Length: 187
Length: 187
DNA sequence: ACCGTCATGTAATCGGTTACATGATTCT
DNA sequence: AGAATCATGTAACCGATTACATGACGGT
Image (tube, rainbow over all chains, first blue to last red; front, side):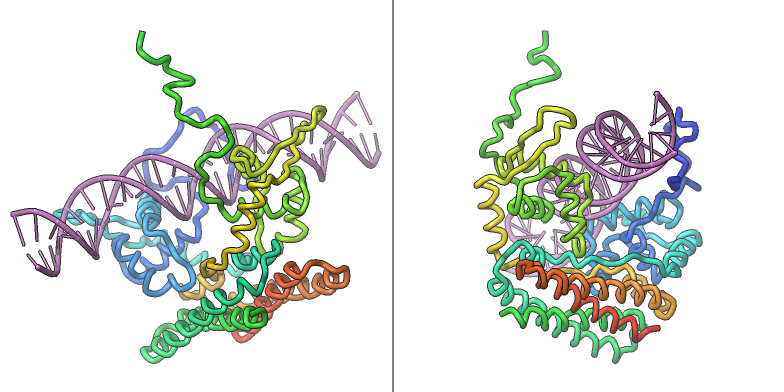
């Protein structure tokens, strides 16, 4: 009933030939790396900067993850790795056909589960914290976020960013507005 | 022959007396456990059920965590542990004064950071998935959530649940509405 | 009495976070 | 040139997810 056959012939802790391993289930972080590299090859450090500039607004990634995750994905054949020969020997990663296929499949799958709120401030309220004492700080945070999103929205739209990205900013604006509304009612 | 018997009890890496250890930084999971036990003592399994019934609506916890986290907190003196002597030897945990203090401090601290959206569906959109193909499933999910929240809200309010809990449900309703609005615009 | 399922718990694994380390660059 | 700072990378640790394991219980 479980997904992968864990049962067959162990005896040899396999490993070694990188090509075509039993594919683990990729994590969101994996797809972030694939998605970014699909736009353009780059080093982990560059990826870090791209995240900081765009995606980081609603989904941050630890920079160390970008090193480990690119290495894993290369090991699994979803990326290729090209080291520069002098100095830092930075590794530039590019997505492979296999990687693009994995990414495309993930993008096409519409059955992604629900998202939890996981808001620390709400958690405190749930456990009996005084709303009035939490609310001002939250209100401040969400107002700032709202302003930020609204400002980058203008910019991005004017310079013709892809619709997908604009949509995520719109979603951010919507949720920020809702948060402002909610916490406003508690101050 | 060699100075210290290789294996156990070497040199004394301190530890041992549970009382007053250097306190690690508690995680959200820690506070969930503390918060739940502050209402009423219970076994990890009971906690699991309480989470499933209430909190799980916006913050799920893996049941295995409830075993490890209660053990850790007891070790640290924030909980006490009482084993039943027959059968399963279930362990019932209660919060200590120290634990209540830690919880109260956390609840009182209003400087909790912002929350990320971290929505998989949005992530897909960001990376170029076709909104129209994602939207119907999302719409369905958020509509169901909205209905669910609205229904439990009535119930909880009628039986006089604490305000904090009602507020979290209200927040859930608000965000669900916003999500419905957002995804509706993309179908 | 046995079987299937639910209740309850532990162990192994893995990703993520934090801390550390070293190579470049700028400034004085 | 040396110090300070930034860029870039690796390693250690720890919590969380997953898988596994065993006890209890209802039904036939």
